[in-house]
Length: 430
Image 1 (cartoon, rainbow, N blue to C red):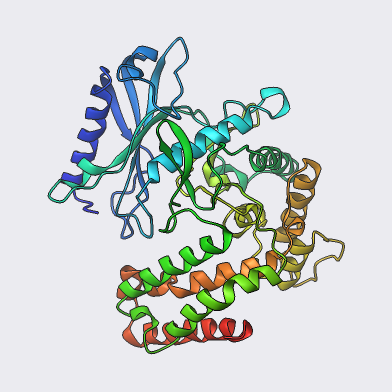
Image 2 (image 1 turned 135 degrees about the horizontal axis):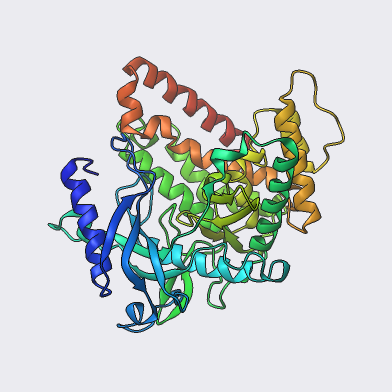
């Protein structure tokens, strides 16, 4: 994506055009968390828009009601967020990307309404309007951007506060996150969302759709993993260094996908009937917090959300509370997988990491949430996750990362990763 002043100006103009299309005027358009130079394409361009007069129901319903859209309060909204989806962000599938995000927000918002008498019913931003990504040849990139106009949420980014909190407050916040996440896990999927992948909108209904993080039509669970492997191989084909692993382990990867994968999942006794909403980035960096009321005020960024086995949340989320199952410490990993933190950490273990992980696990159990130890075969699934990532890891697939390294360093990294893939395949009998 062009990061020049011209592109920056075009995006601001697009935001103003979006606001004008609803019969509104902006007093100010302020980028949120904008970095002037970033060698890696950002996922979204986000703007806080102060309006010259409040936006009301009439502004957003002129062209009829949109699926997943919510009406603003009767008093109107004086400030909104406009979120532009960057179609050139790395590894993203734009097929129904905006649709998937607004559907996930609608499902999550409904789930939050059931928590503690509605205490968190407003934690997920209202969506007021949205537009699909539609890239056309010859257009300026911004003309095809998908976008969402949503509620502006008050609060400070929790990630900026969490590390400096005293333990008592940190423990209370972890309990609050666990309460919210336990409700999130219980989110009821729409009737026509029955497959693994993502969600989209068809004929006014929320239905199964493609995932945002990989290509492929929605499918059963084994098909979901096959689609992830195919997407990773497609990215590996585009890497000048990996070259699709041709002349290396490519044939073995394909053989594993076609002949062994389904049997492996079956023999691992994975419950393939489990299907739920997965945020995929449930972290304090995507939460807002009011330091005065000491409460979480917002759960944000559903761009990576998917519909799949709920164990997948523990592969990508909770890094700040050490709730992921890929911890560097083998002893801590075993405790997370088993739910048994009875053995105290050794002196050379990270004491803070252990304390956070145990507190998180205890809080999740207290609030009735599903923990890693509740999922049969989760260690196998974590191994599959690592395998798919290794097919085209960031260090080998990113042009920026390759530019920063010497050819010798890159070749050594490729050899190391190929060895890891080969070892995993051998362990699975391929």
